[in-house]
Image (cartoon, rainbow, N blue to C red; front, side, top):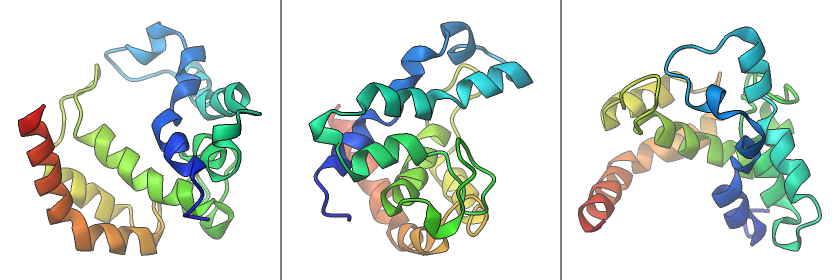
Length: 155
């Protein structure tokens, strides 16, 4: 499952469905209203539809695109999958995607510090995120931070 070469492409193309979301929603500086939230929550399905039949994504990669916003507790979208119903690649990527989102500048907020983002992920253990994935992340968070810092210096 994790040796599926399509995973890498799923990680890279996970948000391609946002191409079907209006810029007025994507770039909105404040909170989204309920209609805008529903439209935004369609992006995994739009992405999966766009990429269906693309050989490089056949398999787990397409599942990452489709399921990267599912939550361990079943309160995610688009399907409300819970626990092991969520493909493992999507559970892994959910932590990486959350870390990136929290530490990146957004139209509606400034980025969190690395430690604040790590704390948020730890807080989501067992609710938003798979506890095994969070444990693995916590063991490597410092090394990931060093890598992120080193890459930022060379960019």
